[in-house]
Structure formats: C-alpha cells, structure tokens
Image 1 (tube, helix red, strand yellow):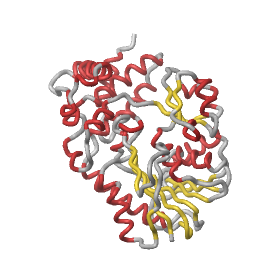
Image 2: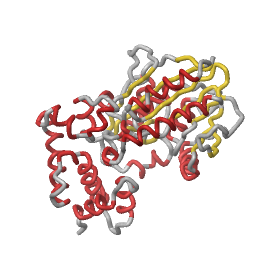
Image 3: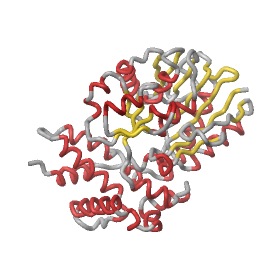
Length: 375
C-alpha cells in the first residue's frame, strides 16, 4: 500500500524556489508505479494544504506532524470558516512584506485560504449543453457568460471524450475575462504577445469565430509547441506562432487591430491556487517583473495600427506591477489614450480605466486589466 503521507513529505522536501512544488508534485507522481487516482489526489491535497497553512505551522515539529496539522486546519476552515478570525488570517496567510505592495483585506485572506474552484470554458453557445452532459457543473451567468462553467465533480476531465474533441478548455474565470475584455472581432488581426501555452490565444480565436489572424509569440519554443497541440484539438486555424524575447525587434512587420500583453508577473493573484509561491516570491521579484512589464508594453505597442487596441493584463495585485506600469506607459506615450472597459464578469458595472478581478469576487485568480487605444 502506498505511503501517501510519506510521498507528500518527499514532495515538500524537494520543493524550493528553483523547484516549484506543483512541478515537483507532477514529476514525483509520474514516477510512482501502480499509483491510483485517489492516492495521487490525496498526495496533492496534503502538499497544497501544507503550503496554504504554512503560517500556522511550527517548523520545529516533524514534517509529517505539520502536514497533519495543515489538514486539520483546512477541514476546520472549510466547515467553520468563522472559527479563524480576520486578524489571524490577514496576519498568517501571506508573508509580511506583501502588505507593503498590495492591500490585504480579510476577504482576500479568506479567499486565498479557500480551496480553488475548477473553471471551464465551453465553445461559444455550448455552455448549457456541456453543463448538462458533464453533470456536477454550475453555469456562471447569462448570455455569453453561460459558457463559463464551474465543475464540481470528481471525473478526470482530461480523459473525457468531450475534452479530447475540443468541446471545452480548463481555464480560470479571470483568465477568460481577459479575452472577453479584449473583445476581438471576426476578421481582425491580433497579437497575443506573451501567449505561453495558448489559453487566451484559443479564446481570442473562439471570439473571432476562427476568422482573421492571431499571432502568438513567446520566448519559449516548448510553450508554443503546447499551443499548437491545443489548437489542433480545438480546431483553431487562424493563427501563426513565432519566438519573441520581448525586445524591440518585433516578430513581424504586421500592424495589428489589437495587441494583448498578458505579461509575466509575480502571480500574487494566483496564490490561492498556487500557495507554494507565496513563500518563494520576494519583493525583488516584484520590482524586477515590474520593469520587465514596462519594457514589454513599450515594445509591443509599436505593432499597433492607428485606432488599435492595447490590452495589458497580469495575474498580480501588487501596485508596482499594475497601476505603476500603466502610469509609466501613459507618461511616455502621449499618442495613446485610455480606453474605458466594462468588467466582462459584471455586466452591470460602470466602464472604468482599470479592471480589478479579486479572488474574493468571482472565486478565480486575481487579475488586473487596463487598455489603451492608439490615436
């Protein structure tokens, strides 16, 4: 019988700033013969509970005891959330330095300590049918928002025929909001400048009805290869890929109707889903990434045609990676003006120059979105 707590201890022992826990977890589980799905699930829960409740644990105790304590806290919080005070949660859920970089409210702390939701994006207009066929699925909203689904079941969705047929993607609700805020039109030409493995590229293509053209770039070839695999499964064809290191030499001379800069960031908005990163991210990371974000935005903006839309997004909530970046851009580039956006997840909201999607609002990642238009 597999020693589940022992395996969790192994993962935590190997995890570090250079070796993130989620990666170590995947590699460790992959190397286990005869591992059942339930056992893998238990190991994962133990590892993430440990990092989520690390601020409450005594490091002098044996690691196995710390893991048990973290599980007890997780179960207590799930069943009796008010048993932990607001003050305690704000004080212990994240490192002290974070309070100098962003507002940490009790509501945010409670959201970070909650189990993350599993969000799906259905093909346009297919959300209700997909929710019915999958079962244990909650529809987020009305109209176009009915294609945003929360899955509450236990089935391995990657193994389903519907996933293999490209009927849906696993994509956080805040990530979906970014593409909705871009609002690309069929026939337009867009550039997803920091495309990664292509989650937002696929969504942009879906919104464009597979018409027009999307350039998807990244500095890592392996990520673009993943994008190509996902695009084939989703039957997405209106795209091209190219390597781009973020410098002033652009990957194409094409002028775009829209450019999305979903920039590398500290990921503070994802700390509910990735609790290990809370304890490995540093203030220096935030400062360095803020400077990188300014460079990416500056260089990518040169690819816009007059009247083109520049959308900046980060899954971070620190001021240096959000407002400071767009304020610096505004000071440097007078040929751009602010574009007011409505929060795509809240149709009743008033248009604003910035959109903040906080974990406590929609139970997704934290996200910052701002847009500019070239005069």
